[in-house]
Image 1: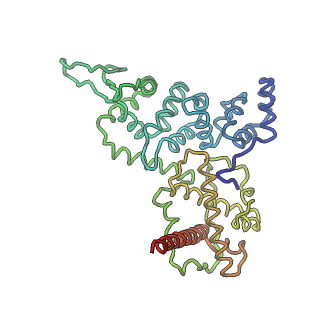
Image 2: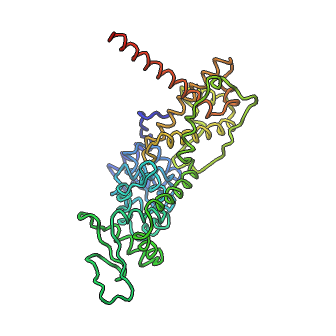
Image 3: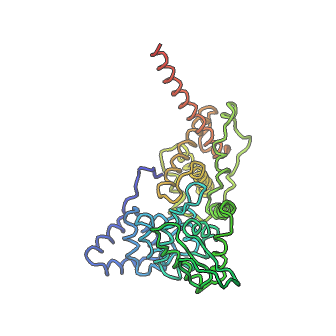
Length: 395
């Protein structure tokens, strides 16, 4: 199981391709092209972030490989090379991938962050009109409205007023005028976005510019959060309030309770936003939880591991970790494994049962909550002892 401090290393195949590319790039591209699309995706996603763009650039048909990347992995690659320089990747990104870019990286906590959205819009503007059009279909109208509200004032020409004087702004149609809210903002990406809409989807263009001066920011933000929450749930990330329930406090007697019957994790497959090469391989590791998983038959193990990944996603949301960071998943996986293992060991010692028996009877979330409460109680006790020691020293 990867830990936050552990970085993936280059595979033999990736190291070979990069070595060949330094001498003969065309040969390296032919060798890369000889691999299937799935093999090329595995080669890219299984390599360190700093080297992924090099490998991706060797793909002779990036228009086939880039859309096959799990959506969060595309976000990680773009951030690794710099979002502003990622237009060549976004040129071939799917609507789902583009939506994930904004869902994971254009928010700070539960608030849309215009400053984080801007680099993505700039990269899309450079990626071409088709990419812009896909982005408009992928990104919620509310999010675009909030971005424009932050950056421009929109003035609409009144009808029937012959004495009206147009403001000193830019316009595409002589009806809507854009005035920048900041002197140093040239609005190049906004102009590109609006030009594409004006030419290809006038009613979205009209609706967007009408909304900027009239729609309330609080209501617009609330709807943007609802749409984002729905998509994140499809990727396995629950709403924040629901995720926080994993830290609900247990009564002392609950720390030792066991359900009366075996339970099977009611978890099914969902589209992973990250690259997971082999779920059973996740059961390899030093944690007590993984040792218990290793004792299960493969079909049953997979169901438990899916529940483990789902809980790690809840931890990431509850802890307000940045979902667009490549280190977030390893960090939440490690925390989930550590605390659930602590709860498993506590119950195993108290009841004299094997770990593989307990994980069939105790829901994973309960193991996590037991481990969290035990760890926190010990930390509080140590803190009180240190405080008592300092008080004694003063007296």
